[in-house]
Structure formats: C-alpha cells, structure tokens
Length: 287
Length: 301
Image (tube, rainbow over all chains, first blue to last red; front, side, top):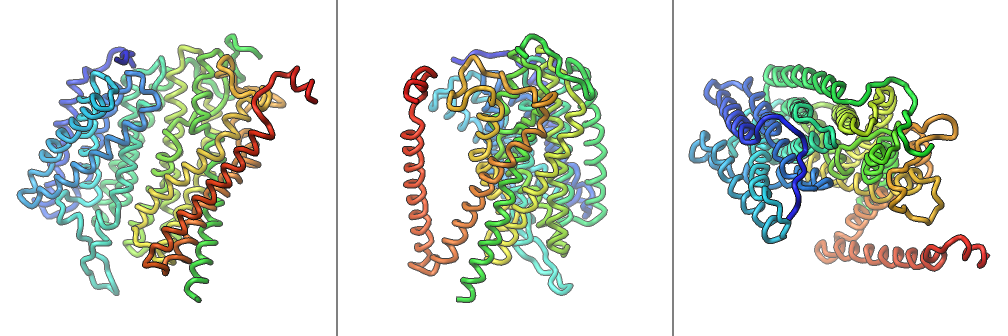
C-alpha cells in the first residue's frame, strides 16, 4: 500500500469543501435556467461560476489523491476527471427531454456512479492500492462533469441537449438551423474539455513542493477557473447576444484580475526571497 | 488530376506550416523548461543547486499544446461563425490562446518556486519579466501556424472535422513531436553539458544542471539560443513529416479500394519508418558501442 504524505498543513476540511463545491456549483448551474424562465441570455455567466466552484473543490480532491506519491500523475488525474465527466455530462443533458431541471442533479448522480466504477477498477483491478482512490476518482468525475456542464451552459446559455445540437447560421441574411453551427456539432466541447482539464490539474501541479500552502493552491485554482472563463466568454460570441457576452467577459476579466493579484501576493508571502535581477545565491552546491 | 495537384500543393503548404510550428514549439518549451527536462530544474534546488532557470511546469507538452491550439481554434471557429474574416479570426484566436499560455507560465513559475522556499530558492522576478514574453512569442508562432494548418486541411482539403476538434488533435500531436524529438537536446545535453557525452546521467549528478554560462549566469534564453540550432529544426522536420505524410497518403491513395488504399499506404509508411529506425539504432550501437571507461578508450585509440 502506498504511504500518504501530507501535502499541506491546515486549510479547510475536505468534506466541507466537497459540500461547498457541490452545492455551490449546482446552485449556479440552476441559476443559468433563469435564462429560459425570463427569455434572456444574460445569466449565462453563472455557468462559468459553477465551473470555477467545482474546480476549486476538485483541486483539493486531486491534492488528496496525489498525496500518495503520484507526482507525474497529477496531469493524468485532470484528464481522467474531464474525460469521464464529459460522458456523464452528455448523458445528463439528454434528461432535459423529461425535465430541464433534472439535468444538473442527474449529471452529479451519473458522474458519481461512473466515477465510483472507474475508481474501483483503478484501485482493485489494476491494484494501485490507494485507500482514497475510489472516492477521489468519483469526486473528480463529478467535478469534471460539473465543469463541462457549467462551461457549456456559459457558452450556450442553456444546458438541454436539444439546444446544444441546434445552431443558427446566416446565409445571405437568412437564419437557418444547422447542426454544424451548434455547440456539439462545432465541437466547442473539445475546447471546453481542454480548458477544464488543464485548469483542474494545474493548481496542485504548479504549487506542489515542500512549502505548498492550502490558500495559495486554492487561489491558483480560482485563478485558473476565471482564466478559462475568459476563453469561454469569447467563444460564446457564436451563440449568445452581445450584451450577454459583454457581461460574461467583464465578470471573467474582473474576477481573474483579482485572483491573479491575490495569487502573486500569496506567492510573495510564501517565497524564500523575492529578488529582481540578483545573482544566484550559493547555498552549498559546487560552483 | 488537377484536384490531386491542388491537394498535393495544400499538403506541402500544411507540411511547411507544421515545420515552422514544430521548430517554434520546441524552442518555446526549451526556453520555458517544460516537459521532461523540467524535472531536473525542479530537483536542482533540492540538491543544493540554486539556479536562475525558468520553471514552466504547466503539464506535459502534449496536453498543454492541446489546450493552446484547441483554444485558438475554438475562438477562431466562434468568430468565423459570426462572419469574421478567417485570417483575423485565426489571429485573434491565437492571441487569446497565447495570453492564456503566458498566464499559465507565470503561475507555474511562481507556484513551483514559492513551494521550494525550504531549499532557499528565491523567486527571481526579472526572469518572469524577460523570459515569459519570449516563450509567448514562440508559442504564438507555434499556435498560429498549427491553427492555420488545421483551417487549410478543413477548408481546402474538405476534412469533415470542425476546427476545434482538429485543433485538439493536431495540438496534442505538435506537443508530442516537440517533446519526443527536441527535448533530449536540452534535457540530456544542454542541462548536463559539463559531463562527457555518452556518459548518461549518473544518479549522483541528478539536479546538478549547468547554472553558469560562458560569462555570468545562465539564463533560459541561452537555452533557446542553443536548442534553436539543432533541437528546434529537428522537431520541425518531425512534425512537418507527420503532417505531410498523413495528408499526402490520403490525397493520393484514397481513390483506391474504396478508401482502403490510404489505410494500406499508411501502414506501409509506418513499416518503412520502422525499418529505418531499426537501422539507425543498430548503426549507432555498433558505431558508439556500450560505455567504456577512459583507459580502455585510450588503449583502443
């Protein structure tokens, strides 16, 4: 069995983070439904916020999983999270046929079942023998599916399958429905997949080391999430009205700027020294 | 016939773009110390060797380039969907992707270096200011050429995949080509150039990377200067050949046997390259042989 190494002391309890992440992300995804209720598109940005909250929680799951000596496995954990999450997310969007309100909850349930199966296979069948494996892979699958669902809701303003496969192209000023111009048909999901997969693995991958601290890693998670939101908001130009895009873009830029400056402050706090154009300090290595 | 000639022309153009992309990608990753040489940059302070080398630990190069190219392609696709000019859309997409790349690079350097405080590795802000922009410039060349190549494949050759999907596929291929071909020049030679060639990397030398230059201290920009001569062009040729052979076999052999002609041509190309690789490997083993100690070498010489 692998030995656990504590990544960082202190910080919030993981179960509390799970609660905040799960409920926060679900509430924000449901808020995107205001678009349908009020026949507008300006609430699309709540999808991005849902994804960021999920990423914030997922970063701690990756940290828990990778404290068992999975150094180079950190990026892979991000890939499996989003890779399995996209299956659950696409399945859940089909539930909109019954009721659109079923989609976010259905997404979580399907992802949890799928993740538990994948985690069980990695832990018991492939014999990786990491005690938290099954639980953390299940959590990461839920995080991955919520991230995909959140960013998809942000780019399209909706999360029902029917709307995701219909887009509109204008030919000589006439609007015609077209599969190729839709979120799924245009494969915007491929970009969202990579935005989520790199954002979920980056914070712990970037901050790992003996002086890793909880608040800096989590601030990096928020920063990566808001940065992905900027990209998603630009892509939503193809699907949403201009005011909705401008609102999404402004919110993403402001939150990203805040999180980036906070991250630099925290790095300055944790760094051994903060030097500008200074020579190498020799501490004992040979010259 | 005319259609085939047009197809071969586009293949050549796409191959040329891919060659530029591969060269820029490898130089970018060597300046930023991404990919497998990064482990030694990360290890050095722990062994007592404080250095001034950039530490861009975003992830492996293939997933990272998967993101940069897919993001550029996604944004270009969205802008073209609202009737933007294609060239402008590709440029704006690449610019946004490179902005994201630059931000990821800085957070990776700050995060890794701040977490090494225990080993007294300081954060050098001037590195962040001078090197990040250079990696961003190289990344722009790599991302823009790859997205343009994807656009050509779709628009001129009629490939059925949408642009973002092509972006993710060729972005990962680009990262893999640069990581596999170019990085050994930087990781095995440049970082350990004070050890004799062919000695391999003894465990005792782990982390003892070259930290001082001919004059003063080694900057990551010097690594770009070194690898752009050999590693960059080698990666460019690698990625260019991948793209050219891939398109060329499809265009030329697809009409045969209901599309199976292209599949068979692909298999033949792989077998031919396997034979060449095997020949190069055995030739290198015979010529350079196993590692011998200095005295034996002198005796034989």
